[in-house]
Amino acid sequence: MILETVEVRNVRNIQHESFRLQPSLNLVLGPNGAGKTTFLECIYLLIRGRSFRPGLLNSLMSFDAEDMLVTATSRNHNRAFRIGISKARSDNIRMRLNGADIRQISQIAALVPTQTFLPDLSELVFGTPRVRRSWLNWSVFHTDNRFMDVHRSFLRLLQQRNRAVQQRSADLSVWTEQFVKKAIEVTAIRESHLQGLNAHFQKTVSSLAPDLNLTLNYESGWSENSLLEALQRDKAREQKIGHTRLGPHRADIRLQVIDANGELLGPALRILSRGQGNVIACALKLAQLEHLRERGVQCVVLLDDATAEMDEIYTRRFFNLLNSTGSQIIATGTKNTEQIQAEIPQCVTPNVIQLEAGQIVAA
Image (cartoon, rainbow, N blue to C red; front, side, top):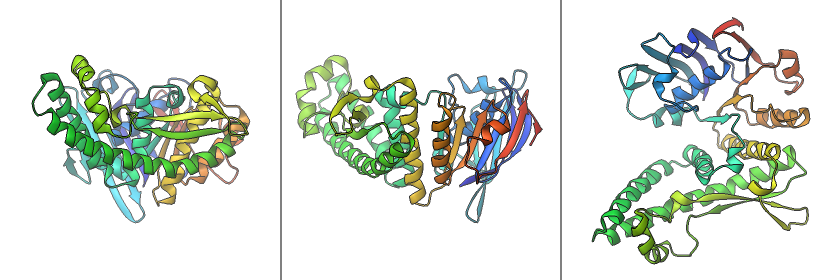
């Protein structure tokens, strides 16, 4: 799925603009404060129903506006779609697909798989397990039709089991049995998916950062073979703290650095520099894009100055790999067109959008 046009009204400093996009590389250029990141934020809002920056949705509205609107036309092979999201300052968010109201943003998210490369990219390596779980869940969602329903059921059971733990309910064993069954399903789907991703990750790392060697493994969220037995042994501590400590909601993706001989050096989050972490985070997301491409899924990539900390060699490698995934790329930058042209594949002619103070001045 690609985006063909995006219309924005009353979002931060963009009052009313229409953007035309091409299927490959789109460069959104301009000085700081021009509205480049805001444009990416609009696309993210349209597809995910929230901003990638902290704050309430009303904070996205232009200062003197009472509502905001983002719409887009998109195409998947020969099928055209129109999607939209709007919000009045005093009302709830409204989402539409082909002219009809929808209740779940996942209907749009499923149509337009969207990956981000933002300035906080290295948090995928150095951040909390929640960040890495979210990373894994994203590509599972777009490649396994079972996952969304299974994961939602698991989260509901987690809530119900937590309530039973807090109330010391006699039904705890019943909720535990159902929780364990769904937890094992979630874990099996995630583990299988990560095995497929790992091959792409290793290949990407060898191309992007050949001096680094890493392993990628799934940690289930409990240390024993039987989750049921682990929960039974943890019962007293659970009741003390009032929630379920073990399960897929505590899972992590373990990145370990190894030397050229395969000897373990230690966790990536302790060994890698910030710049190296940024490169490995790029490799993790590029691996997902390639994994989806193999399955006939074209993604939209939002790139907000994510290569700013990379040197020219890494940047060229990154754009070559990104271009090979067949994704639609929408990238921001403060460099001029000539500087960026030197970093991207020569076979790519970008669509350049120049922004100043929230307005297109050249396209």
